[in-house]
Length: 142
Image 1 (cartoon, rainbow, N blue to C red):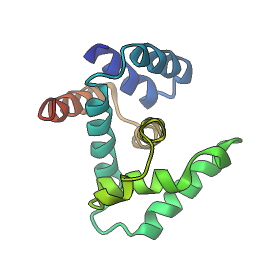
Image 2 (image 1 turned 180 degrees about the horizontal axis):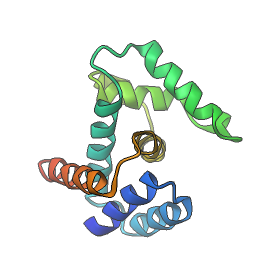
Image 3 (image 1 turned 90 degrees about the horizontal axis):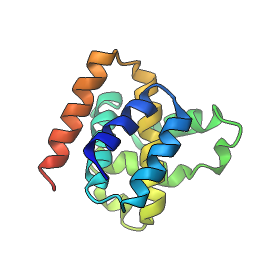
């Protein structure tokens, strides 16, 4: 797994290039996600903090998850409670992820990250800054 593959994954998510994102997830997965979880987690947390205010309530988070799931034909198969728990954990309730399986957590983080990045409509320069910041934050935990 390379940091470049993770950067490419974040960029693919931001431009809704689902085929590239799926291929990158498979490539990164073959390497065992070593170090990748920190980069995705950092990007996820940064995106959550940029989207939700510090006053966001559990109802605000649940409403966003509900609207987001409704955008997709198979959205009802997305793990709503886990998505809400991950977002709320990033906002300061870390105990909410204690019982979420790692595979579910990773899939939900990647999906939510992609949705938040799409909503922000970052310019290429802003996306480069976001990726650099995510890598910098992740490096503190590796």
